[in-house]
Length: 188
Figure 1 (tube, rainbow, N blue to C red):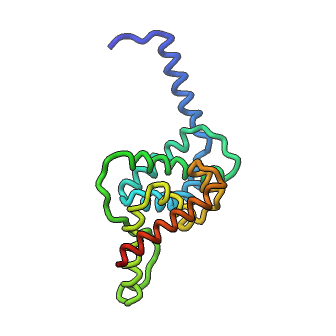
Figure 2: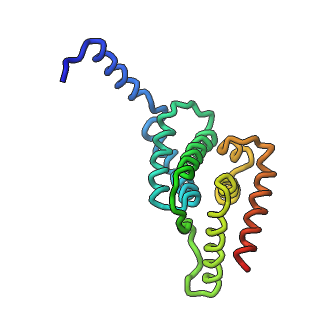
Figure 3: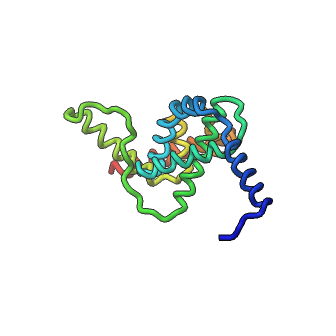
């Protein structure tokens, strides 16, 4: 190993101090933000990828990128939208990689007693919906999930997906229509 020069040591010190200044939130503020957003972001990631383990990895990567971004946020809603945008980009990157499509995982929502007939019918509907969702294009899944599972407004969806607000209503209509067609085909 060679000796370091004074200029190289100075660069290492500068890099170390820059790393300390990277995070814009203090630990307590981050904990509060994480507690409020981790579950919905994880549910979004798991539904979009269909893989709980992958969702865990992408969630960790999303928060890491969020913290490293050094972006000043106007509000908590802006922070949340920015985090979902990062998560969306991670899912898109993952969809570009070749992978085997697996059955969607449970969404973490409590369901009826599994012994009842209604519960069996609900389970079949969830399975049909999960299969139909995997056949949608990634953007269609993103739109439907953000609108109906997360309850995001059209503006929040536009901010998250990088689209124009004026196009969200039409894109949601088309995604719903395509999903309905896939559900009808599956029911035959």
